[in-house]
Structure formats: structure tokens, C-alpha cells
Length: 223
Length: 379
Image (tube, rainbow over all chains, first blue to last red; front, side, top):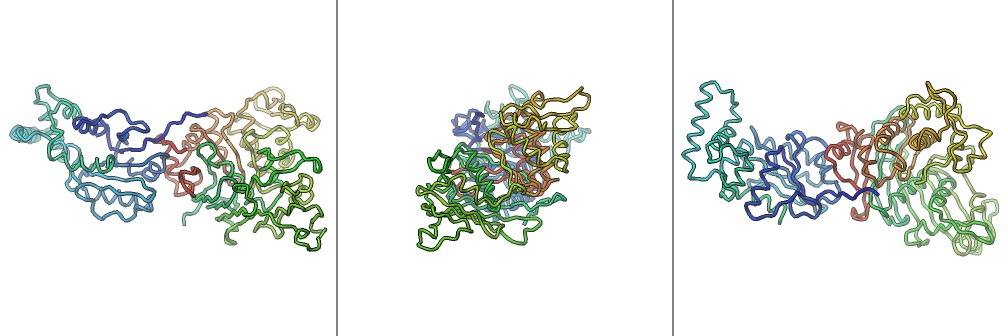
């Protein structure tokens, strides 16, 4: 007889490997034991979809929800240039594939969306950085830089501007990403990866700015 | 309403089916059905029962389909007076024969404007029991002490009836006498059980298709597995031997291979595929039911099998329903699904199980493709 591998009860779909590694660190810092999720595990399985287009591809959300044993499904996507447009894309996908989720709010709530489906399962969505502004994960992480580093962050921003003036090929959309990584390059152990930075408390997982995201996550997966 | 991509092969297909009071299926609804449907679910979830219902619905009260259902489950007992009797109470939920079994299906495609196809099986008091005169010509015998099994179908003016013994058993011979399906007429439903086809079945089906387009179609199907296959033949002189389980007497001619190749020497996969290909060909314009379709097949052959089934069922206008417990089996189906198909598409998966209440959970073709891509568990 075939092995009875089952879908985990909780699943979080993310755009890239950075989110997949970083999110557990945010919660480990809060005392949550995070092991690789299997059925019966208390933490969601984080699945790296390699891009928002794969998360929002026709059939994906419906198939994920229909997989046996799934109870809670979350998606985290980057706003990039347009948070409202991203939410519209999620709404449209729900409208065409999840009939009972066809009346989602026109605007995503500031503290993220969490809703119950007719069959008792739950769906949640968060648009990085904060469901309102343009940007991505790095804009969210910029807010986790300890307040006493404000001057250094300002200097990092200034440096990035200076580098662009000297011909650095950086695109506008990546400026914040570059500022965060520049600042990280100046730490005692220079250049940690983002999840390492949270793990070593270079970025502050308890920063009040992380609270809305943590609350959304908790409402969705650990109500 | 989403439309199936119907093709020159024609044949109406069911888009939804509703079952009431059959075996463990008190009530069950399947929606979003397509050309090829794979039913998954845990053991005892009722997958085989769903196949049987589709057979009984589509059979137009052809006795041979009821016989297959009862024979494949071995639901018969020896009987002193009648030789063998079928235990038909097994078909009814909780063996409660006072509640009829009701089946209905919504077809789409050619002929679907006539509306839902329905069937009902019930046990009724005989006229004799009611103190009324018997109509011998209507097949009413004096020994109808247990009433009659009545199988009605919207597809046939007069349904199937058989007298029952006092303990509600259906004598095999009695049933055959009232058979409405004649052996000249190919049944609208082909049913392959978990054991697959035995050599005598292959011989019988081959007789039906030999020198017709269906034979060519079976050869084409075999070529999808091995492109060297040129012809299949069943040796008439060896027919009696086919009744045994040996696979002698069925031969292949293969390109670049000297002489005739006995089918037994080309592997189990080929045998299973031949059975499927012939059954598909004989089911032209009808329904093919396959229980545990993956039996005896390696993963790499399964992919080819689904490609063959998808192509031939479409060309021949056959709607296919198959069951599996195997992850390899549904993943191999998923691997040939089209991620851009408009729902429901032509290849769908349906999970049957008590945890889903009275409806199956259906995956349309583009969702099936997502299952393959994400490695999702659908059972």
C-alpha cells in the first residue's frame, strides 16, 4: 500500500526562499518551537513558490485548499509598486476559484486579511510590507532595525545615493533593499543573511513595527 | 456553465451525478466531471460503489451490467433450488430493501438537451403477493414469493424485472431469462474490475472489435506503449485455453521482430494496456469503468497509459471513470494535465470520502496540474 503522506494542516505560500527562512526566525525569537512542519505540527509548512505569478496562477489556490487535510492557508506577497493592485489580483483569483470567498473586502484590512471558509477552513493574506505601502520584505525589515541605529541607517541611505550618483546600476525599486544590506554589511559580523540578522538580533524581532504582522500570523495559524 | 471540449468522437458525457441509497453511499453528489475522471479516497470510502452506480445509471437497465457488479464482488450464494442466487440486498443502503436506489446524471454534449438520465432499483411486491393475476408474458413467474427487483431507466421504455426468492435473493438463471441486453448488442458500459481482464474477456472483446475501426484503435493505443506493435490476433483454435488464466493464444506482430510474439512475453504493463485499449474501443460512445486502474503498472507506464486514455477516450467519445489509492497513479495523471485548460478540462480528480459530507471534492484539470507541480496530497 502507498505511503500515507498527508498534506499539512497549515500552509503558508511565499514568493521566495528569503521569506521561507526569515519567518520562522521571527517566531523562534518569540519562543515558538519551529521544526519542519509535518501533519500534526503546530507550525505551518512554508512553501516557496518562486514568484508571485506562481502563487496567483489559475488553479493554485483552489488545489491547495482541496488537498486533503488542509485547514489553514496563508499567502504572503510583495506589494512592489502597488499594494492595492496586488490585493485586487488575490480577490479576483478567489472570486473565480473559491466561490464562498467571492465577497472579500475591496481593500485589504491594514492588519492583514483573515477569513473563514464555508467548510470551516481559513484563508489569510498579507501584502508586504504593511498592506498599504509600496515595497517588499526589505521595507518590512527596515522597520526592524533598532531605533538607536537611525543615524547609521541614514548614513547607509546617503551612501547608496552616493553610489548611484557614481554610476551604480541600482534600480529605484531596490533602493531600500540596498540600504538594508549596506547597513548589515557594517555590523560586527558583516553581511549576515536576513534570517541570520533576525536570529542574531541585529534586526529586532520584538520591534513594535513587527507587531501587526505577528498578530496577523497568530490570528491565522494560532487563533 | 463551463463546457467540455467535445470532439468529433462525440458521445454525451455526464457533468454531474447524484446517488441515493446505494451501499454505503446514502447520498453522494459528484460535480465537475469531465472526459476522464480519477476517483481517489481512503479504503472503504465508496470509490468502487461510485463506479457501480455510474454503471447502473448508464446501463439502460442492461442486465449484463448488474451481473458484472454482483459477480465482481462475488455477491452470490449457492442455492439448492436455483443453483446460484445473487444477494441483491447488498446493493441497498443498510440492506434496507424498502428504500429504492435512485441514480441520476446530468449529461452535456450531443443529446443532452433531453435532460437528466435517471435510473432506480427497487424491490416491489409481486402481483401474486398482491392477489392479482400474473402476466406470464411479462415475465412474472408463480414463484415470486419475495417480490420483484425492478430496475427502471429513463433510457429504456421498459426496465429490467426479476422475481426474487422468499429471502430476497435473485436466482441467476431467472435473471438471465429476463435479460434485456442481447448478446448482439454491445453494452453501453464496460467494467474492468480490480483483477483486470482475464484472457477470456480479452478474447470476447476482441471478437467484438476484430476487423472494425475499433481494432485499429486498439492497435494504435498499444503503439503508444510500444511503437513496434503492428497487429494483435487471438488464435481461434486456442480459445478454450483462454478460459484458463494463462495468456496463451493472444499474439502480437511487432516491427523488426521475427515471427509472432506471445503477449505473455511483453510484460504485465502491455497486458493491462491491451485490456484498457480494447475496453475503450468497445465502449465507443459509452462509459468505461476501471477499478484500481494502476494495478500492475510501473509509474513510467502509467504516464503513457493516461496519455493513451486521454487521447483514445476523446477520439472514441468514451467517458472514463477509474479508481486508485496510489499516489503514483494520480501524480502520473496530474503530470499529463494541461495547466491552461479551461475548467473542468478533460482530466479531473474527485475525492470521495465521508469527511467530505455528501459531495465529492473535484479537482478540475488546471487544479490537477497544480497538484503535480506542488506535490499535493489529494487522497
